[in-house]
Length: 374
Image 1 (cartoon, helix red, strand yellow):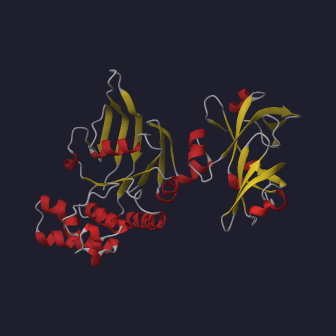
Image 2 (cartoon, rainbow, N blue to C red):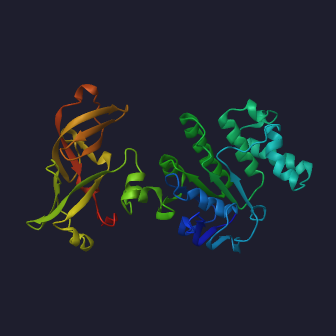
Image 3 (cartoon, helix red, strand yellow):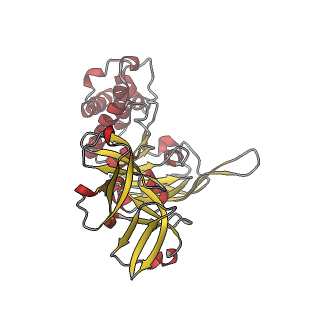
């Protein structure tokens, strides 16, 4: 296996007006040997383009890409020692699963016994031994995806590249297949780069996540660090379901305590015992954005937060989720989401109740730069 390095990589597409359209801007990444790295972001953010540049399917406008110690900018895809799994499986319909998996090895003129050994080993890893004589039309979506992954495994490449491989599957099959791919990574101990727009896939599968938007890296960190310490508003809103609540208001110093008040006559007020970080001094007496995760809001009557601020709100919509309940609250100025451990149902909609914020988990964002402040 090998590490992958991207150094100040750009990709521009020409336009009819003569000005280049940037798709990827100044992306620098280090993917360690045997690491599972996930590129995540909305459609058009540049994640698939970045993956295709690593694979050699897109030319680089500027920058360098290394696989191991070798610069691969000018190498053809077949010479980069990578294997790619696509969104649409790309299986040959007239071939059996066995022949689809073996096709790349046959092109490289591997001995028949070696081909059979590799195909059977991959089929055993993926649990598809009994499907090898079937053609793709006789396979389910999940089975076709396993065959596509098997075709990549038999190559024994330095790097595996996955381009949204689960997006064509139904919800139940996606959960099953992401578990299978995670297990596969543990068994193969391979370097894997995985592209998805699904933040749940990213959080559950990646050793490290790179969040992209508009062709730029927004944040690069472990899943929990991204969730707990988002670098900016985009990351805060993209990771998490429901996403982080963002509340407009003002920060003031009141008797040496930091106080937040919701804008436009809202009901949320909070006083913090912690000291104001120097970075946030500029936001005093100015508009500020206050961020709080849904699980850090709870009904005041069952709240166990060590540092809390109570506020009244009207329950607008109740979404029973089984072990927990999503409550959409009207505070006067905002609609925010609370993920409560209390079992509620639609009969509680329209009621005014007391809620509590977990102030130890609060975030502040600069409205102008959108960056999070310590």
